[in-house]
Length: 359
Image 1: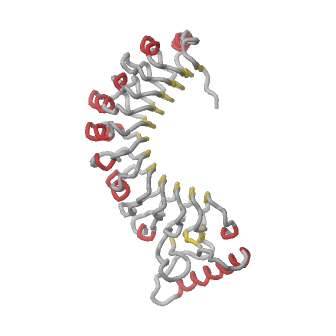
Image 2: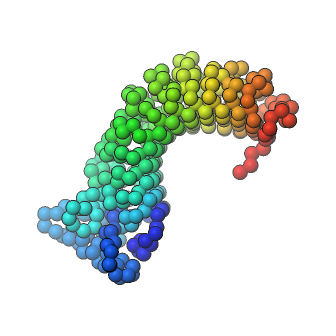
Image 3: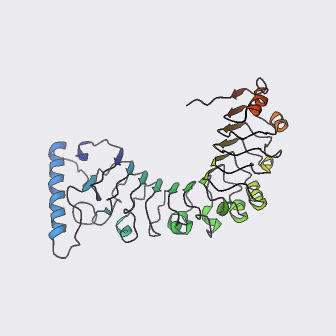
């Protein structure tokens, strides 16, 4: 059916519980028949090929039936696969010849690939079949077991790993060693940076992580001091405070422009020494339920935007530092009532003041 859409650029498979295999449909050649007859021919070829794989002499048997296999159009640019628990197999391209066994490499226009809750797709014994195209720029794996056999991807700039507790950065050395990645996200992988050679992170500009212990070490922060501009610290339910060593490592990130703390359920105080981050323009504290105060030296003079939302215990802000910095926007919502009143007195001195959050 997908061959009827020659201009399809984005495809999402959502809760396809019967799908167990992916393949790439044969490329349409000039002078071929109409789309209807072409897709019929492709379907016949696919069925014939699958039958040959199941019954053919020395060829490896493909466990996927024609009803379980999805043939992807070779021209798609974005592919998202959500909650397909039976998906365990990337088939060879339909047909024989030099393209056989290429996995998804025939998706030569594919730029973004996101896989969520497909636990069998990249399991170690099958990852040999999973060959990704060199065109890929963004790769996101969420709840999808994998191994270190993922191939190097020369154009990959964004890598996201989520809900893989036992995975470490070492498992992705073929991807990290290219030096092309500028955006790295790790969620639910609190050991990702442990033991990782800092040079693997060279050139990264954006990091989203909850691995505070692994990330805030001198070798890593020293390497990223001139490149990292955006840091999002997310979903840490156990951290009450930052150690002196971690604060010193954070202070080395002098190129930071955006710093956010999101869902730090037990964090009572923001880190000290942020005033030394001379490039910091935006500072956010969101859903830090027991956050009580920010240290006096936590507001750099360069700060332009401060957002504090859903922090009901917050009672103290360094008001003097707020008046002296370059603040252009202040958002205060769901904080202690007395603090909200004190912040309200800044109206008129700050171009944008909001005490409500609008979707």
